[in-house]
Image (cartoon, rainbow, N blue to C red; front, side):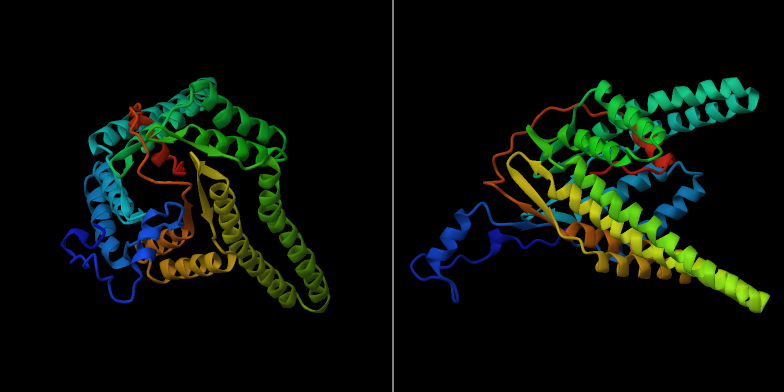
Length: 373
C-alpha cells in the first residue's frame, strides 16, 4: 500500500499566523489552482515485489498453473496500488475465479485447435480461421474486463466500442498491413491506438486520441527503418572485412563474422529502447481525458541503460533479477508521464459499464500479448 501521510492528524496553523516559511495568500492561491501538472509516481520496490513474484511462481508451478489467476490478481493489485497521481492510487478489482474460468476456456480453445490440426489439415485450417475471426471479439472483451476492473478515487474505467469497430481495427487493419508487406503497418498501429483510446472512459468522461498517421510513420521510420539501415551497414561493413580476411586466413574471416553478429545484437539493443520510447511518448502525448492532457518524457538513453542492465542482471542471476527488472522499467515508464489538468479532478461522474469477459483476458495471457493503455 502507498504510505500517504494522514493529513487529518496534522496540526493546523493558526488562521491568524501563517505557517513558518510560507505565505498564506500563496497557499490559498495554490489550493485553488487546479491546472498544476500532476506527475505520476510509482512506489513499488524490487525487494518487496520479489516476495510476491517468487510465491506466485512457486504456487503456479505446484498447482500446475491453476494459481496463476490468483497470481495475476496479486501482481496487478501490487502495481496498481503503488501507482498514484494527484495524491491517490489506482485499484484493481479483478476476480481470480473469473480469470481462471477464462483461462480454462482459452486452454480448451487452443487444445481444440491443435487437435483439429493433427487430425486433418483442412480441419486445422478451419479451426485457425475460426480463432482468427474470434480474436477481435476476444480483444474487445479483454479491454472491457481490464478497464472495468480498474478504478481511481472510487470511479471505474470502462471500454465500450463495438464488435464491428474491434473487427476492423484489431483484425482487418493488421491483415491489410501484412498484405502490404508492412508498408501500412504504421497506419494499422494508429488505427489500433485510436480505437483503443477513443472508446475508453473514466467514469462518464471519454478519453480521446489525436496522434496522426504521419507521426506513426515517423516513429516507425526511426525505429524499424533505423534498425534495418543500421543492420545493412553493419553487414556490408563486416562483410567487406570478412572477404578481405578470407584472402589472408580463414580464422580472420570467422572472427569478422563473429564481430558482425555481436554488432547486430548491440545495434538491436540500442534500437529496442528507442522504439519503446518513441511509442510511449507518441501515444501519451496525443491522449486526452476530456479536456485533461497527458505528457510523456521518456528518454532514449535512460531507457537503453535500464533495458541493458536489466538483461544483464537477469542473465547473471539466472532469472532471479526479473522482478527487480520489472520494477525498474515500470517505475521509469510511469514516472515519465505527467497529467496536465484543465480544471478540477473532482468533477468526474461514475458510469455503469459492462464488466467484459475474462475469457479474452485469459487468452491474452496465454498468447502473451499486452493490451494495456
